[in-house]
Length: 339
Image (cartoon, rainbow, N blue to C red):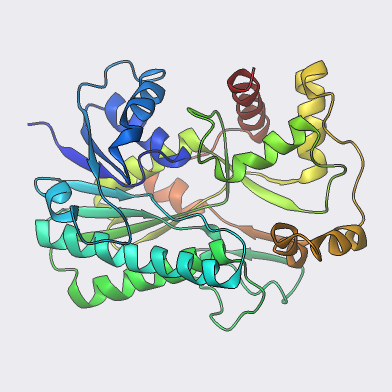
């Protein structure tokens, strides 16, 4: 009998590839959207990689509202809770984003436990297992590490991920019942895009290709391929050993200057606008005075906070492909999508 998986945030970058992976493995998939007006575009994007979308359906629900979640969840065997709100500038909007992520996660877990779902796999972030940025400039963390809730100058997106995962574990400790929880903590997610909407970290590659970044700030990324991340979600969904566990999903650590050099070397003229110079730290700090997005980056300048994905490799036999392949596939898909 075909098992059914609910994937939240169906129009998102990671969720799209999770849907593809599930369909290719023979699952029936229900994807949530805030509006069914996006169904056609999402289905078309998925079908470009997974031709048979007959087992894909959609439900209109919102992380900030109770309506519709029970109906979407009824009869589901598993849930991949991938959706997370993306915020905009301003303290009020940041607080709203944090509340939506935390409360939305609890809303999903409430419906899942009520429906008797076997397992919820939640997409968190490596930031939830990172020591304070004010600590040593280099660190290596595993899943036993938790963020410092008192840390200052954390951007709203990372804070929303941190508080949402903490709230999820607290909820499951109190009310989990027969439903188990697993969390996946990815680094910077790159790889080929299915659509040019809701790109998340992929926007970094887009800005480099468009020449919108004058020089490379001293920032480093632990790259994980979106296709490998999707496979990890599915593996964690059914593996008995994954119940009640956290799994970091990171690959190679790459400085931004090396990302630019890779794009230049691999893509030739198509990457002619990619910068080859480094941006001095003080210049980025000056620019951040007028740009909140840049302001969120300044605490991470020159810092090398790494994470170990040994647990995912050992327990779930997982790995992330080479960063060069991920970056080049990501860039080429963006170039095709904007042609």
